[in-house]
Length: 401
Image 1 (tube, rainbow, N blue to C red):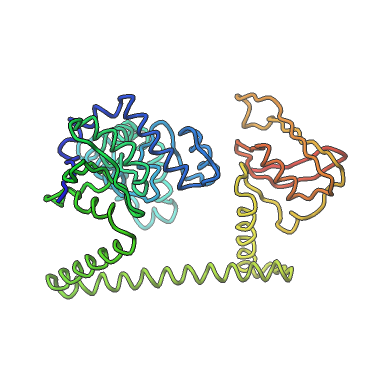
Image 2: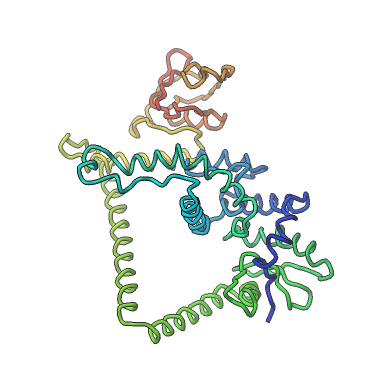
């Protein structure tokens, strides 16, 4: 049975001092970039963390990757570790009187009628709590073991980060990557030791997850599924045979409710899609009193627009039916982008010029695609492109916030 390196026991004394060495930092960068270049979009090759941040921030504003990000922030699967740790930190700071807790008890029924405690709590977190927690969170991301678990990225993370660390920590061993379509791990020459932070399990005192890591890197996907199904069946039997009836019924009904919620969400998505298609094909316009269907139609059209322009560095808020409207028959038109809104009062930028050519009449959709190819960007509060017209040879556009 191969035994995994005991990351928990050796993390702060052995591993953390190595994280700032150039060799390990290079391995971290290679691992993250390799994972992102293969998992997010094979057509885009990221060269730096900033490059990743720019792309993700344009795709989804919830992403915020910067110099204080950890490898786990790039993971395809969300981890609850940091959230749990942050909750525990807040409890500790409250108990030691380093922070003032939010006064939930002050909100009686009368006060709730004239105030919004949830909104005030958000302001409390953003304005008061966030600056206090920031140094703790940054330190957590730089030093905590869970921050270096790039879950879902084993094929790139273990051959870079873990292999580099293994060669430094145990230089007398000959380490290599062992790979299946399901998992890649790091193993020594006689298959007795594993160096795999993604499979480290402190509860598995026999091998610290080493046995599972080796198996997963040796088996096909079908074999993995059969093994997991067998383990799940055994786990369910153990729970059923060793718990009270209510402990069986409660999770069962909770799972049923979860499944029903998921079905209802899918039905709503299907209804929205069908309603949207009907509106587009039949050119239906709803009356003022039929707001629900009008919103479904709008939501569907916005989804199509997002899929038509996946690489746009701005939000397109032009009516879907206008995208195919011919706005000019000129062969060459110009857009002059000036930065004279209030967003740029302290950040002066030179004018940008975009030239668009075509031998055919130009539609709004064609012009937008050509602007995207030329890296046209709205990077201030006014990132919503709301109108686009052509007068003589000049493109006039309107933006909103």
